[in-house]
Image 1 (cartoon, rainbow, N blue to C red):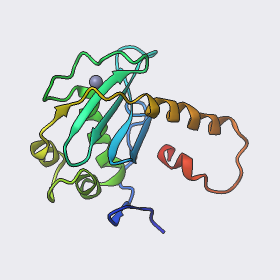
Image 2 (tube, helix red, strand yellow):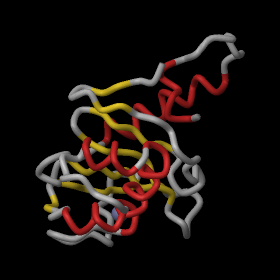
Image 3 (cartoon, protein in one colour):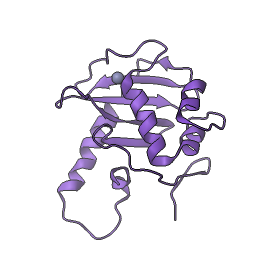
Image 4 (tube, rainbow, N blue to C red):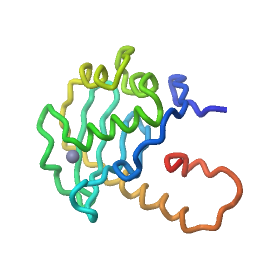
Length: 153
Ligand SMILES: [Zn+2]
C-alpha cells in the first residue's frame, strides 16, 4: 500500500535521490523541506523549505545563519537541489500537486510556475527532527517498518 498525503496525493517512489546531496527530505506541514549538503564544506549543511501554494521559502545553515545564495525572489542552489531531488524520490506529478502547481511535465516546468518569495521564518525544527530521526540508525533493527524513517529509504 502506498502512503498518501492530505488531498489524496498518491506517492510512488520513482528513483533513489542522491542522499549525499540531500540527506533528509520530507513533505510536512504544507512544505517541501529538508537538509541539503553544502557541497564545499563537509561540516556544513543547509536547512531549506518551500511552502506549497505561495512558494515562500528560506534557507539557513545548520548553525542558523542565512544562506548567502538566496534573494528576495530567487532560490539558492540548495532549494533548487531540494526540489529536483524530491522529484526523483516522489515523482514530478506528486511534487507538483503537493506544491499546488498546475500539472507539469518536467522539473523545469515546476521552476517555471514557481514565483519564489523569501520569508524570514526559520526552520530550526526541520534540522532538530532530522537529528532526532538519526537516533534510529543507532538502534538494533526491529524487523518491522518504522514510519519515521521512510525518508531514509
Ligand atoms: Zn541555500
